[in-house]
Image (tube, rainbow, N blue to C red; front, top):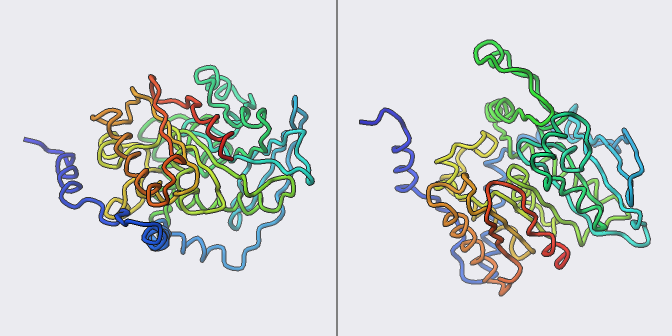
Length: 359
């Protein structure tokens, strides 16, 4: 006899699977589905509530907080007001080759859950960041891209890095939870509050990332026709949302986040930032990622990643095959690729060559 909801939820998902995936046969079918799906997702994310909050709001020019000379590039720390009284810090890494007469391709590099803009940019600001990069040295992918000649933007999403919320009084009092360090996140508290107000955590992140793209559009040393986005784990999730909902993103690399809702997220119960009210009734991860078609898209997964779920690598592969079908209606299957490496949950970096080729 079971006293939990696990089996009930599994059976419910199977009996009432997502019902709004793409099942068209040609590019015109896809364009109609894409338009309808974006509208539905915007509603589920609560974007209309954020639009209400931003009515009459005009973001100021980002403030430069710090500037430093590095080998081959300059690093700027800026702060961008994305909503009234909401500020997002980010690094802008500008290679010495970037000029207004020779604008560069660019990448938005979003940190993983358990990381921040400093670790992605390779800025050793705190003991937690130093420890992070010692344990996972490949996660400085922002720094890697600027060394390859890209203008790079490394933001702190809501609840990450310098945007950590205060530790909740309940957590301190009843869970004996210590104060968070610089690579912690406060997704849980932001998610619960946002949802009570008709918003979502994913919507907050999407809003901020789109505001960052708005700023990037003003820079004469960035070639907007060659703007990509990438991220690992939570950063892969946010990359997926941004590229799916904003066509200004010309290419995406999603690492460690091609996991279906039934096989992975329902089973492993990832952080609350993965959940959007009502989403599973209509869409799976492959459906959201399919909105990126036919723009270049690269996935990578570790064969032994515990987040793959009970079927192992079969679930990411099955999700990829469904995304590939969307590319097929454009005869662009070569523009979506899936790299699998023998390893655990990590940024492996299989997509660098793909980005260099297609951006």
